Length: 71
Image (cartoon, rainbow, N blue to C red; front, top):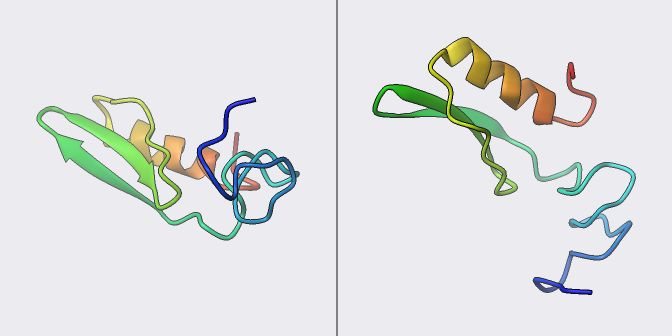
């Protein structure tokens, strides 16, 4: 099994694939950013959503990424 370092183990509260998802529950702060004609969601945990033409879709991606999100 490959590991990027500490916090990658299953069930590890600082990261890994525990009950709160692969990024851990404490480290999520989402925002949206734009690059050219595209908007995308990003998170303080390192996750980045796909590039979208509509800002509303990027915001929905961010909401879906959060633990307990809409999706």
